[in-house]
Image (cartoon, rainbow, N blue to C red; front, top):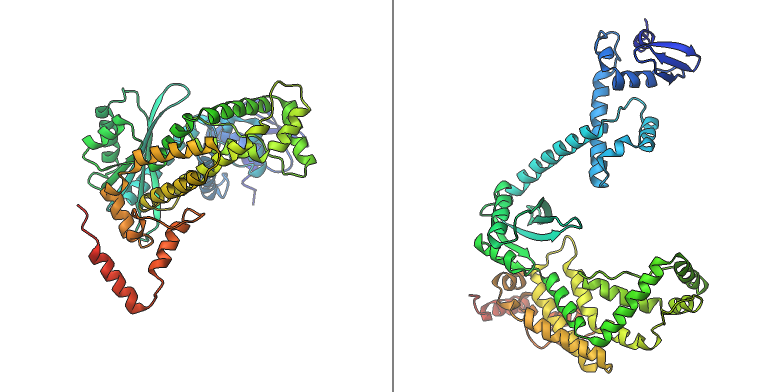
Length: 468
């Protein structure tokens, strides 16, 4: 029986040499090595009508599975582009084409325009799946944020958070879209309303978390939704405002930023810093750049400077630079980091994925208040003590009403880890943020038996006043 692969090859190509063939349609010369993979790929990509005119008997006997294979590879390609944030034009890169050719010579890459359409189709497909899933959730919480890109375009992003039937926490991005209108409360309300309606979540939104911008808060209130301030952002504001008030610390930060810029902009300085660390038997580390919108980066830049103070000093000594080491300021930096440590821990705790955070807010506020007050009282460095005082001032100013927020109070009370233990009382001394809570839990469990536990639990619930 005649091989079905050979007929389209003989009809459309001529053998020029043992390893070269010419296309009879376009005169292109192709490599040939006793198999038809390259010529069939050429026909499919350049002359699909030539194969379409072949009878079923002359076509590849595995065409149906070949079509299935192509769809499978198309899906993998789209997934890769989406996951790795690759440009659609990657399919036109010579290196990528060579890789695909070697992996599967029969696969014809789609054009970048086709890939764009495939990504849109994939988005709609995944969106429908997500919408179907979210609609089955009786109550959800939304988070929203607005920002301006480097090209001065405004965007609004909305994310949905929920607990599914298996009590697993989940989230889905409802949308990230341009916001060309002015950022008024009415325009924000309209945009949020459209997102909620589009996803079929009307009546299912229990609360919405955003920053403290007046227009954002007002827009949510106009929707008739419960608004909760983002506590992580509040912590960011507290620490930034307190740090900005410290003139000595501000001067130190300014000099460190200048030093970081020097090392990051000079290959010679970077090499000297790496060499100094290696000669001291240390794992090479780089200095960290501070980000104005994230107070944690201020903590990290100070901490990294403390960690690298000796290598930095050695590197500067071997370089021609007017930048002077901060040898006399290490105590101020170290003591300030001690005061800031509870805020660093709290930020990381509240920013963790797959963890419930609402019930933690009130206990964390109380523990921060205690830890900062304790550290400030024991602080001997005037600058660090002033920083601690400013931190206490702003956390009392912006977080003192946390217990009066009904949703947060109920979340803490109903969380079996906290119940009433998370509310304002005088906590014992401790060196760890969560140890404060643990010590109070241990105190209530000192006399442990099934009967006493039940009695204590009944009395505790009966003794707590109803929340308004």
